[in-house]
Length: 418
Image (tube, rainbow, N blue to C red; front, top):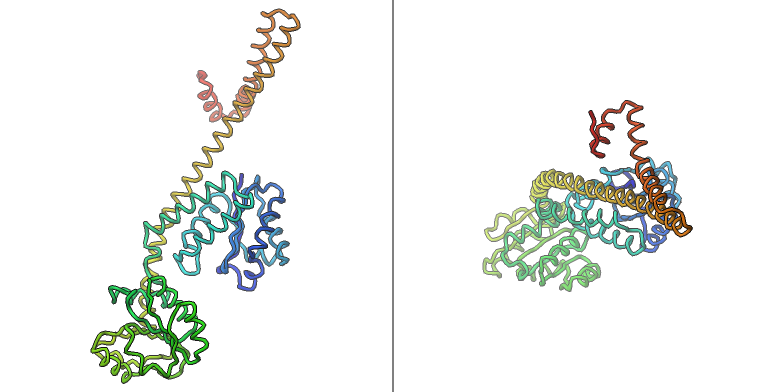
């Protein structure tokens, strides 16, 4: 069997093409059913996310061109355009690729963990559709175990590589009991949404959202169970919060040194942790001059992110070594399975030959033929039947002066090679 991985991702194809070949939950069922009809395809798994579409198949022979034609026809796109933006891996390279993908080594954000869950879902979908048998079941279970090892034995996911995550991780280091802290989010855009998501993952309960338009703040607050306020309320409410994270499109600072100074007085100098993710700044730089205010800008966090990315890249090198070892392990299992199948085929054929000759001998005895003659004929034909293939192999090796094969056959059949 040949294992093939065909795909496009954020590195090889523009978003316009990725959108065209993405699978919806409904089309995925249809696609898996369609793959059953391809000549030689035994097993298949389809992975489809916003950044990649990949088709994994186990086939009787290499069928990469056939797969490209199928994927192009299914989504009604030009096959030559798809081929120009696609990558194809076979056998060991395909196994290594799926393990790298599951471990987050091929993601837009190195080490991101969400892809493992997406691949598990793809595997479950394929299994439910009857497209996963012994080989793919072993491959994907092995892949999930490898991804877990990479996550636990390396630092691939230990450090923040987005400013939103870095802001929350920094807050976690500063405040021992982060879930108990009150957090104010200024703005309601995509960055603040990401910050809010990370805060909720850390168990933060007391959240408030301040935005220029109350309606937009209410939309975000509804998903968080957060308090809502407008920017005009900041001077009178700022003192209530331990953490302030801001990211708006304002052209002028929204939070000045004087506002923070007043808030600290009302807090009786309890510290405030402030993160300004906006460009231009939302919080005046002079706030850093206040003793109990700790202000970090997007540049400060970018520096942290760059250091963390370097750490992840080093961890990725360690992860690749783990994956390469596990590729060998899987190939050894695959080879041993093929050997077991060959042994079974060989023994089944021998048993079939024996049974056919025994049935013929019993029939001859029933017809009154002499037992001695029947036994001799049985022994002669059984010996010839069992020795036919080995004899032909020995003759072919000798004819071709293939000494290596001759020595190997003589050792297998325990012959005197001298």
